[in-house]
Image (tube, rainbow, N blue to C red):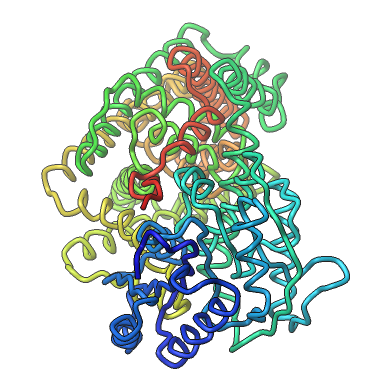
Length: 614
């Protein structure tokens, strides 16, 4: 058969279809032959990494019938990836595909083909949800399908009723233009094609088909939640948000983020209370404490540079310090440490660091932070036990010092800190232990809950994330360097509190070693407590833990009111430095959450943008 005479290429995506593929190909050939001239069509079996007899059956049919071709893949490409590969190999100008279960009545095939071939449409799709002609679908199929299509119409402004029907045709020129814009390679592929075809002004035809469900469909956690849901959000951002974002909008949005942080601070720190407390403090020492805290930020940038370098990415300290400032400002606005995601977006957009590696670097940083302050707190606690002061501390926490709102908050915070500290140590042990093993059980675990091709993609992302963390943990020198810088960073954090303490009366009676011990323990436990995402910036938990511990460790020397004043001013100074640094970084670096996300949406892997060609 001459390839020049082929007008219509029908692709049958096949994965483990040994029981049905022969009948599907024969039915397709006979149906095409009924309305197309001989030699004008071909059927391509797009076999997607099957592990049954489908490849052998496809080879046999291709050898015995020149109208049949077999496109094989050794590994799973996903629905979209398999279709793109087959369409590239196809010879026709009208490109068609439908599901091999033949759920759609084949009498509609002529209308599908001729919509492109003779009627001049660019895209044609069957529909099970056209008003008045809805398919009779069981609830377990119909409800999720209606929900998906409704969300697609709502967020992506599609005019179609059914985006998932596996019965579609394309004009080659239109598909060649659309495929480079399509990012998904799995089940969202055809939905993205339909949405972007409409946005580009192509003629799209949707017509009702008779459809009968075949087999059994189950809700697939990986495909339906991680796959389809996330792709709707990603496409919405790409089409509706990204075009409206520029550098000016990014700066404005970043500035607003900082202003929101400032506006929310009075909800957690009463400005009047802060001013009252500061009135009794030495302003020069309060200012000095801010200066000491500022010194810790470049060190944070150095540490983050070392973490990224260990997982294979280089960047400059100035940029990374600014990115940390911006993300920590976000943490003052939102609970659940949502600001951490800002940094992953920023380093992805500006330094091309993949999201899994970006989040892995954040995880490494957080683990070292928790481990450091846990060790600091634990070291002081051991010293307290050795000097016979632990009993007084326990009694104070459970007794009079735990009365009132601050006392109860402090008591809760201390218990939470103990839990967080234990989890931190457990996490480090687990990470180091896993770094010493070669096995990777992530994909196997995901396959236990899903058999979809998305498993490979999701497993790859998680494996990259875990692998990056293990890489740092397995390098003894890198572990030591990052741990050392973490100790310096948190020592400066504690020294900030020490200077604030000295700015208030009542601490002068304490010896310097005991003052440092009190500060190290109170600051460390307070920071462990505020790790839990209960309030923006951990305000409240920090003050409670700090106050109850200072009172317990300085009996008769420092009262609860003074201890609370120190906690409030210490936390306020650190938050102000963070907000000012965040605003300055947004202006100097000209980055923001909105711009970074918009830029990252444009990063498409080269393998996903290869154009369709003959």
